[in-house]
Image (tube, rainbow, N blue to C red; front, side, top):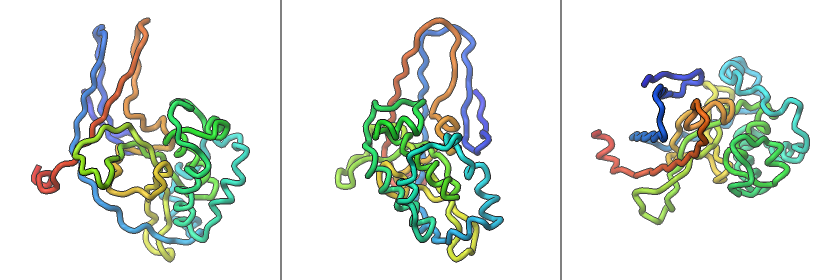
Amino acid sequence: MSRHLDYFGTEVLEFGIPTSHEHLTIDVRARVVTSSPPDPPEGAWESLASSSYVDAAGEFALPWQDQPRVAGLGELEDALDADTPLEALEALCSLIPDRFEYRPGVTYVGSTVRDLLDAGAGVCQDFVHLSLILLRRRGLAARYVSGYLWAAPADDGADSVEVDTHAWLEALLPGTDGNGEPVWVGADPTNRKLCGETHVKVGHGRFYADVPPVKGLYLGAAASELRAAVTMSRLDPQASARA
């Protein structure tokens, strides 16, 4: 097994099995520490033209799944007409779940934004892909984030929960009053909010295909079936600090 950082800076564990086999189990365990992010900057739209912003934005400002241009997004674009990029990002977190139903099974991993628009429903991956197009059309750099969300109810007190892979986005916001470097700010349109300490990031890329949880291939004529399960457990902060 080898370990390396991919083009986007995500840590990748890579392995191969040259012998024949009937099943494969991947058991990955990690201990992470999260914290509440700082308040997002409230820079102006004009700052998107600054050299510091353009340099930081890079390819995350380029169109994707929008060539030829996806039709039927004019009303959604207009809804993001806000005084500042931050206000537009906050509006997006309400706009997507207001207009589209969260419904598993309607789309699949290879679905396009057009599929989401036609169905009027989808899952977090679809919501993020649409969000990327809308933000990039406004001139904001945005990237796809893959990870997990601690989803236990606030009053539940549970220490372990079963979760699925989750997706959200990060938008590059200019510094307040044109000062300071632009900052990547997480936003979760599926859950109507900016990201906080309950979001556990695994990696980011231009879109889903850059950061799938597991990617690979096998050789042979056999059919395949994939099953996945994720458990998140909340540890005592003091114990985590000592580990």
